[in-house]
Amino acid sequence: MAGVKGRSGGARKGAGRPRKTPVVVESSEQEGPVLIEADDMLDMLRKVALGQVDATALQVRAAIAAVQYEHPKAGDGGKKEAKGRAAKTAGAGKYAPSAPPPRMVQ
Image 1 (tube, rainbow, N blue to C red):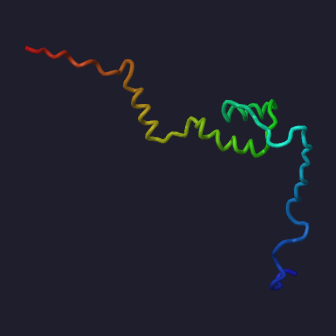
Image 2 (image 1 turned 135 degrees about the vertical axis):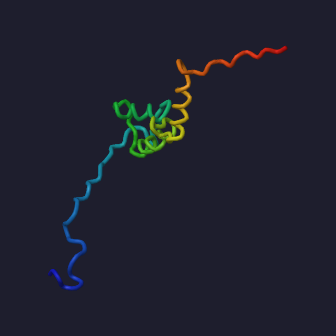
Image 3 (image 1 turned 180 degrees about the vertical axis):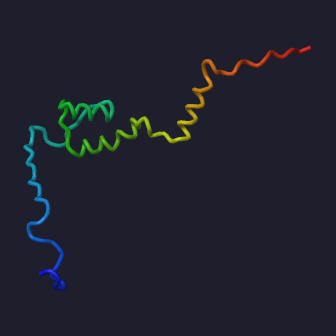
């Protein structure tokens, strides 16, 4: 019914992505939250990725959010900080300024 006012557009029955089926997680013998021992969040994420630790989805999401504060990426500094670091290293080595001449006191 294209072109009829109030009849075109809107949701269609059966259209769109099919809904996900809920995942049933079998309960283990331990009740309550699972405690994961890790030195830092990056270490915990490595253990989860290697299958050494079973973590909940909430724990993994929290670790991903927290790891950026513990381990910043190499390029997280700004242009001014990078320029300042480069200036400090440029004046070293062969091109370092020489010592001033000794002052003669009479």
